[in-house]
Image (tube, rainbow, N blue to C red; front, side):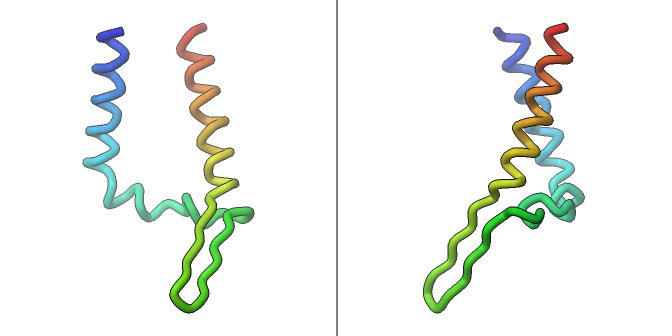
Amino acid sequence: MQRRLLIAGAVLVVAGLLWPWLSRLPWGRLPGDIHVERDGFQFFAPITTGLVISVVVSLLLWWWRK
């Protein structure tokens, strides 16, 4: 368990350091992501982005356990 927490922490640190470049990726602006803007109201539902991230994480965990 400790090893997994250390790896997760290291991944978060690396992602934080790479954030200026990662923020340029089209995550959150994929087809299927819902973004509604009206006067005084804004709604954002990243449905497609969430599905893509879920599939990638599931594949990585499956590969890691193998």
